[in-house]
Amino acid sequence: MDPAIFKAYDIRGVYPDEVNEEDAWKIGCATARFLPSLVRGYERGLADSHSLCVGRDMRKHSPALAEALIEGMRSTGANVIDIGMVDTPQMYFAINHLGACGGVQVTASHNPAKYNGFKISGLGAKPVGEDTGLKDIKHLATALVHTKGKATGAIKKLDLTEQYKKHVLKFLNPNLNKLKIAVDASNGMAGKMLPAVFGDLSIEIVRLNFEHAGRFKHRPDPLIEKNLAQVKASVKRNQCHFGVCFDGDADRMAFIDEKGQVVGSDLVTAMMVPYFLKKEPKSIIVYDVRSSRVVAEEIIKYGGTPRRERVGHAFMKKAMRDSHAIFGGELSGHFYYRDNFCTDSGLITLVHVLNIVSEAKTPVGDLIEPLRRYYSSGEKNFEVKDKQAKMDELAKRYGQGQIDRLDGITVGFKEWWFNCRPSNTEPLLRLNVEAKTKELLDANLAEIEQMLGKPV
Image 1 (tube, rainbow, N blue to C red):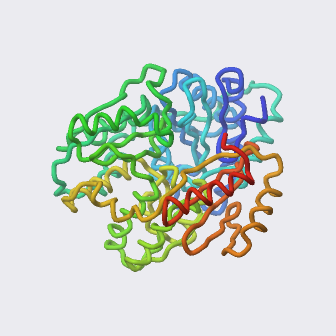
Image 2 (image 1 turned 135 degrees about the horizontal axis):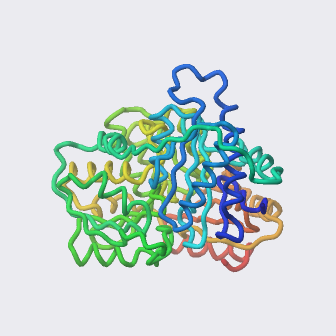
Image 3 (image 1 turned 90 degrees about the vertical axis):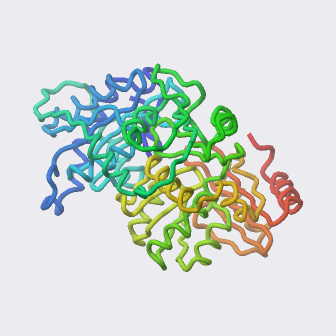
């Protein structure tokens, strides 16, 4: 087993050279040994506190990897609940709905079809990352010398579609106006789950890439704008109210307005602020360090409390739990909800946006336009050998600004700001710059690029 497949938040690699059935068995065995240890002291009230949930996405190699993973779990005596081919948010639902001690989703999310991997969650669907147990699982898995062992644990297959559908649709306004939307499922799990959950509703859905053929029409990553070409064209051609493009495992998405323009996820967060603060005034809303200043401005404007957090679902989910926040949004297209176990969900995000557009009776573009108060560089990557030294150099150069190091370095001025943070897995610095004017953005971005080099 190549230890390099263990990343900061999950396990990923190319199948079968980097991730294969033998690896899956060992990861299953190690996960089943580790996760129940997190449950001690919490057994009471949990229906299946010694069981693990396993789900998988639509990739051709996912069934075989899931089967090997399950056998590895059962070899330890652990009981397994196989919930089948589902989106990742349904895994989070299953763990909580069933009271399991955790679960594993077999998926490579937004990566190309040749990749696969494992997302591991613990009790309550808390993420298991590098600092919360993935190092322990890595140690256990890489120490195993064979994949033998009698599968003594029980296994049962469970279809939670109806329960999951009920959970998602409980957030939907029953008096929703009839809307027409374009949906690009990216040949991923939204292609199965969207019809299953939304099929009975009066919403008209123009479907794009709902098929599961083991390949992707485009890479299932909605953060890359070229992947949005189909849905942008479809929105305009079919005169839709808006469009969405999901990633491979349907835990995040990008939004397109009625004119076919991409709406940044931070602006979607800002658009959702008054909707949630109307439900519960003075609530806390979490956002990541890359998000536009407009997010905090809108939270304060509507009487809420902004909480800025590090990038990454593990940090966002912890911040949601720690602060009892009602809602959280990340520039990557992940949106988190207190009433969804503080986890992210693409389908629930779609429900809330449908509610907002229906209630406003206003085009999405008109809702977003007042929020376009700043100019943004978007995220740019720079190859840097000594990341910390370069961030220290930036801090020294812009020392007259307001500096914090919550995640990398953030420097704020009255008219502009930037965040520069290190990649967890690559020799890269990631830069986001925002300014009041296009001229100010261009000038400061050019100056910072002189220090960091050309973007890669």
